[in-house]
Amino acid sequence: MSKIHNAFTVLMDIPTPIVAAPMAGASGGALAAQASAAGAFGFIGAGYLTSSRIQEELSLARTQLLLSDTDPLSIGVGYLAWQLEKDPSSGAGLLNVSLSNRVQAIWLAFGNNIDRWIDHIRSYDASSGREKKTLIFVQVSSAKEALIAIQDWKVDVLVAQGSESGGHGYSAAPPLLTLVPSILAVLPKDGPPLLAAGGLSTGGHVASLLALGVSGVVLGTRFLMTKESFYNEAQKNVLVMASGNATVRTTAFDRARGTLDWPEGVDGRAIYNKTVKDVDDGVDIEIVRENFNRAIQDRDPDRMLVWAGSGVELVTEIQTTQDVVRELHADMMEHLSFVSTLIAT
Ligand SMILES: Cc1cc2nc3c(=O)[nH]c(=O)nc-3n(C[C@H](O)[C@H](O)[C@H](O)COP(=O)(O)O)c2cc1C
Image 1: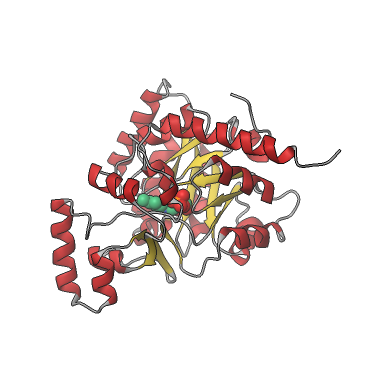
Image 2: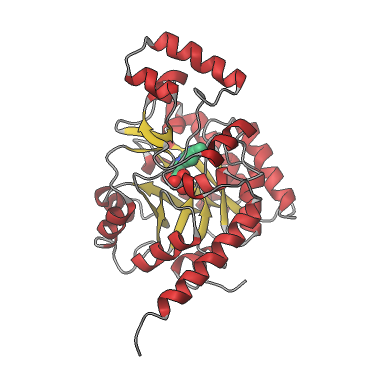
C-alpha cells in the first residue's frame, strides 16, 4: 500500500490517515481489529459496555491481530465520558480494562470532566512504566473547546466533529468546512494532529479534508455498513436504502429509549422515521416508548433507531471493513494525484 506521510500517520505508525470511529453499540473488537489490520486505525466503542464485555472485545481484537497477551494492542477504545462520570470509581475501572490491555489509544468525548479521565490515564501510564504513552484522542465541536483540549489537557490527537456526523454530537456544531478552518486558525504549529469527522463517505471526501489541512479523518457511518459492525440486518438495510435528506439531528431516540444523561446541547443524527415524527408531533412519550420498544423486537424500520451521518446516501452496499479501508485509500490517492496535476508548472 502506498503511504501518506504526515503528523498523524507517523504518530500512529499507520500507512493511511483513516480512523474507524468508536461507535457505542456498533463497533467492537472485530471492526476495530480489521480496520487496523488494513492500515487504518480502529476503535472499539465502549459506550454502554461493562468491564467484562470490553475485555471480551479487546481479546477478540487481540486474537484477530495475531497478538500475544503481552503485546501492545494496535487499536483504541472510545469512552463516553458522561458514562464514566456517573460513578467515577467504576468509571476508572472501565478505563483500566483498556489500559491494562495496553491499547494504543483512548478516545474521550461527551463529558463535563474529561480532564479527570485524562489525568487518570496519564497517572496509570506513569505508574505502569509503559514504554510508549497511551495516546489520548478528544472529540470537539468548536474552536473554543479545541483550545481547552490543546492548552489545558495537552491531548495527543484532536478530532473536529461537524454537524454532518452520525450518532451523537453537539447540536450547535458547525459543518466541517467551517469547523476545521476555525480550529486550524487557533492550532499552534507544535499542536496535536487534527482529524475531521462527519458525513465523510468516500476517498474523495478524505482527500478534500486533507487538502483543507487536517492530518486525518474519522468515519463512523461508512463503517456501520460493514460485515463486522454490530448493526443488525434490518438496520444495515435501512442504511443501504437511505436517500438524500434521510437523516435528521434529534433527541427523539434518547427520549424514546430513556438515555437522557448526555451533557447539555447534545443530540444525535439518525435516519428520520415515525419515532422522530411522533416526538415532534407531541405524542405522549409513554406511547412513543411502547411503539419504539416493539419496533426493536420486530426490527421495524419505520420506528427503530438507525444512527447515520449525512454521507449515508453515497454508500449502497455492505462490505468487509478491510475492503472499505482499501477502497477509501485507493480512492483518496487517486483524488490527491488528480489535485496535484492542477498546479501549472
Ligand atoms: C452508531 C454510532 C455510534 C457512535 N458512538 C460514539 C461514541 O461512543 N463516542 C463518540 O465519541 N462518538 C460516537 N459516534 C460519533 C463518531 O465518533 C463520529 O464522530 C461520527 O460517526 C462521524 O460521522 P459519520 O458517522 O458521518 O462518519 C458514533 C457514531 C455512530 C454513527
